[in-house]
Image (cartoon, rainbow, N blue to C red):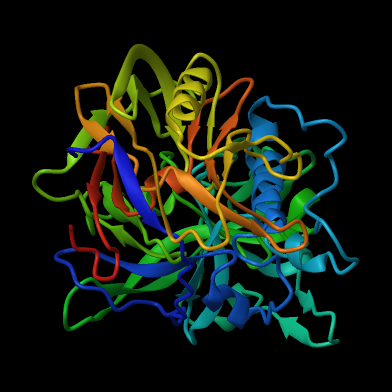
Length: 457
């Protein structure tokens, strides 16, 4: 990248794509499309028509609020000020819709025979895949402000001809001590980061319907073990994952681990993040030649997709210092603590050509710059990271465009938020990349991609 500044047209892309179980071109992998919680397909499925306008103050405030409540607070970060109310709009009284979606990306999956569809939350920060199942306590649907009722499917082992129980002597059963006998149903209980949030039930096995990533897409029925979630508590009852959660972590109970252990795929998967809020998850994808790679820094207990950054460059000005960060697809923005945050933000500020706007208390971003109403192009400092091992990670779009019609402000902001504890590379820094979580080699891979067909740029 020759220039240390980048030209950016000021525009908002709104592309309506159907939320389907798979039509993507690739080789030797299979998976499904996923969508951002505020994307048009998710809004269409859930009949969501009154979310904050994309690019507005309320839109970015809601995303940052969600990050703090569902992701950061559980990792040791306190809520800022009195900001403890679960996900509400900045204005207006109709708050149920933000409560109805807590995670960041959703996919429409199909399970069982006859097949039932579920809109599940994708989570690289947890392991178990579970569905609401013969529920004692769960979300059965959403009520819209217009009075429309949106019912969710509820799984039942008794109505699927391909369902079977997972016995206590299974290697996937982690609560064997609670079993009355080896042949009993294996119970499960998973506690999540948000206070009082749990899913409890027993493990079952059934077919997960996938599609191959090739021109002539073929259906693939994989037997998968997952949680029959009879009781959900805490933020799950507020709708954090209203119709199930799809764990993508490193433990043996996660979907990629089970598929790899069955010999169906290499122990690797990728997530491609398009600029329009859509993407693709591909199981078995180990990346492509020429991709950047860096090793995971694995903890012995509860390993996460943690990597090490050795250099930060802003506008061509490089600073060498080492820090670890979690690549977390479930976090909207990138959160950094010092010295990384101060280095990036202050260098960016010193090179920015527009006037800084300081009255942005409604936004999570400290460094925002005023654009004129007629300004269609502007330059901003390029942000690049160097990973352990020397691989360069060019941040395609480190800024966010913000507009506020009532205030008459038109801004671009550095999409980095100050953290007091953990460093997280969020989805905004992953946009425009196919991110590979290779658990065989224990490396994170990345390559620029338009994600339309999961092909490299």
